[in-house]
Amino acid sequence: MDTVSKHRVADLLAGAVAVGERATIEGWVRTRRDSKAGLSFVHVSDGSCFDPLQVVAPQELANYQADVLRLTAGCAVRATGEIVASQGKGQSVELRADTLEVVGWVDDPETYPMQPKRHTMEYLREVAHLRPRTNVISAVTRVRHTLAMAIHRFFHDRGFFWVHTPIITASDAEGAGEMFRVSTLDAANPPRTADGKVDFNQDFFGREAHLTVSGQLNVETYCMAMSRVYTFGPTFRAENSNTRRHLAEFWMIEPEIAFADLRDDAQLAEDFLKSIYTTLLDERKDDMAFFEKHVDKDCVRRLAAMIESTFERLDYGEAIKQLEGAKKKFEFGVKWGMDLQSEHERWLTEELVGRPVAVLDYPKDIKAFYMRLNDDGRTVAAMDVLAPGIGEIIGGSQREERLDVLDARIAELGLDVADYGWYRDLRRYGTVPHAGFGLGFERAIQYATGIENIRDVIPFPRAPRQAEF
RNA sequence: UCCGGCGUAGCUCAGUCGGUAGAGCGGGUGGCUGUUAACCACCAUGUCGGGGGUUCGAGUCCCUCCGCCGGAGCCA
Image 1 (tube, chains in turn blue, brown):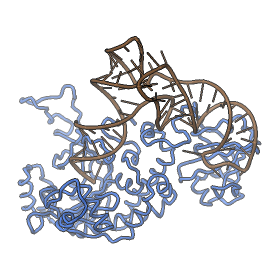
Image 2 (image 1 turned 90 degrees about the vertical axis):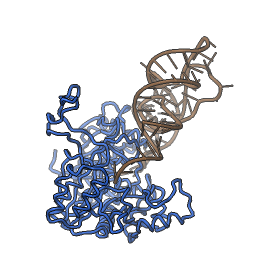
Image 3 (image 1 turned 135 degrees about the horizontal axis):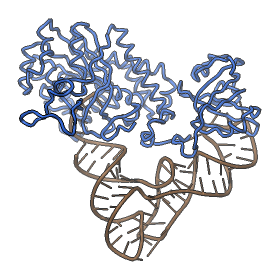
């Protein structure tokens, strides 16, 4: 092998190697077309960008008959040659190979699951180990990475610290949602207490433990020292929900800011969404063009509109009034005190406002115990950010920082104050107003790409009866 | 979990009134072409999701189980 340096396809297509210079690429064959002019065209992808590199393999290659003419989709190859201006349409440059080495064959091309054709997303889910070789999943993968990096960059640039809140939690105070148990007890024959119950005292942690459903309560502790913090990590829900919007394991982003109220929180959410989607449109034009053409023709326009808009602020009570006065007939009735249905959220952001809107100050009875009670005594400082085309994209709140009010809410909801020891301590020692929000990472990807099923924007989806890979 | 739909070739699907299965793509072979998911011709391909039932006969009708998809609920 010669000393020609290796390059990524993305770099070559971007002109990193001048025409006339030599380069080596490594990747997987997408398609092969033979020309009786005495050459074959082999499209090679290495995942570095949406487009493959066209490798021109002339019949003069020593292994042309033996190898090149046997190439099928999925073969792994290494090609070295001169970068030349393309004679054909569809690419600016191509690699005229003087060596083309097959690193790994596809042993049975007929049953290779990834054929050079359109597959259904359902089928691709059944071959999750091979689906990153498709246009759509590789594009999702690059978008997912770019958004993740954009999120970290957004927070880092604003002085936030990434706090690694625990995956395993012994707190059963997190509230909503069924949790996965974490245990080393013998499931078939667990130790029992005198009254016949499972004795979790003998379990690994000496008490019941679960996978976390939210990092918020933990991250609040670091907020009360570091001022600006966020979590970005996996989250688990054992709900038996089988929809295109739910996973048993998903990633969530939860910033938390000290010395801040609900309005600061809403502003953070607005800045956040605009920033990460600006980065996405800027850095992944190729993939977004693909989604726009083949998945959701409105996705780029939707993001551009969000970036350019100023988010509206709307009081919950005002939202109810507007909904009650709407000419549109809703499946669900509208009344103060109820939670907004998806159809209501869509109407508010799409019909009434026509751009993203933060709905503020919800009735306390439909919201969590930790949300700050407003002076009216019947609403809490909660917010939902609604966006055209999707509805709710972010949910957040100002947290109750007054110990006596928090205790009253815990009691009111029938919760056990003993379960909230360390959380209450934050209100005893230097408490300050603070707020935060939660964003489901996969839903943010769905919103950007238009991918309808959430199982297609995470590499290995976990859902009821689905954990094969 | 509830409601609805679907399950036929490697993939996407068609299959009428119940009479032992077809197309396109993909694969193989050949032709043609600086080709772009190329094109043309030919060839091969099936436990019709599993089990049970009705019938002379079931891909088709009935029961049941499994799986998948969509919607609802729950939510991120």
